[in-house]
Image (cartoon, rainbow, N blue to C red; front, side, top):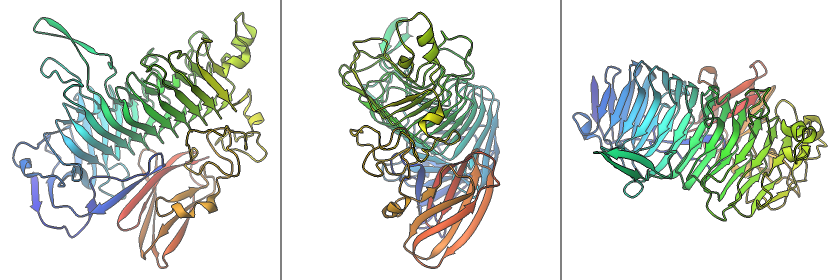
Length: 566
């Protein structure tokens, strides 16, 4: 059944269709405001078509409620919002669950300016949960869809991928980069686990062309490109192939604040990485945590002109054929697959710990003026291979391997060691310890990077520190930022977690702590009686080690982010 109501203003406030956020900040910020209309769609409805009654009354800025309950699958098509007034699809009255044997869980086709959100209930971090897609992918965004935002959706147990967001040409629609651009693909605050292929597959991997045979005639079509990609705050676990793959995205592309665990479990060659920036891409890749995958930590096969910084990569490829040193996997791998001539790749402030083979393997010779600076690289597996076997390399080449001497690269102020202890960082959370040789030893020309892995300011003191985290990030000097985002510390936490933020009025406050897959662990309410800087103390010592999510609701806005417990 579909229920329709059209009003000037609703008595209660809804999530706005567009979220605002600070780039590379480990939180999300949503403004709540009234809507002009809403439709309520129950769980029996499988197709929501904006060109057919009753949905053809939906206008830009309207909201379509997905009522709580279990569905088989859901197709959304032919909806058009505007840049300032997207059409919002959001859960209501509880969790929307999808469990299907079909080839998709949710499909969004021929839509523009859409927000699809699972944040309809403050007690459920992932209000839309795809539990199983036996024959395909969790979500698909295609058929010339553009300007799409996906947030607070949990996707598990998909035969193929988690989320696919691309439009490929076929004989029925020879869409190409000459007649369509996919703008503003915004995927954040989602949970993806146990996807058979990629966790996120964004943009075509055939950047140089797709060969089609239509009516007996062969033709090569250049697939559309993406302008505006933001992939952030997602948690991705146990993928068969790459954790995140972004290709054909040459403009305004960012991949940040994602957590990727156990990628590439299917061990399919050329499909093995935590994050892959594929052909035709130019993406900044920063503040990601990648651990225990069987593939390379980060692969860069794009156009160049991008930065890779503030990432923590642990045990990349270490469990992939561990007794076969010829099957190499690296912390960061850079190639010439689609590099633009004379462009540069800059690799700054990363922690690369225990990679199977090389810390950084830089195989690009077409790029120029590349810079690898202020990185911490610990215990690359190829050290003994190069040092002891009959090769032309020495053990130190395993930290940054440059196979071709003509490559144009500068190495500045990196720290290389066989052990974590000698680097002076914690073996559990990788924070810099007092007296560490990393402190104040970073390279001065840092590429305009002003934050560290924890989104705390860089620089502290007179000089930069090496690695993903600055030592003592100066909590008390950051009070001016509280009107933009909450400040959470220590992160990682062990005993008490402190959250500070600025409130200019008296208001009700609710704090929620969730597991990484969205299960609620703690709910706390408070009332702010005195405006100003607020400090919340939350006891987390009883929590098991792992990744957790927090959210703060203060009446008309929502802040959320991640923290680590060790």
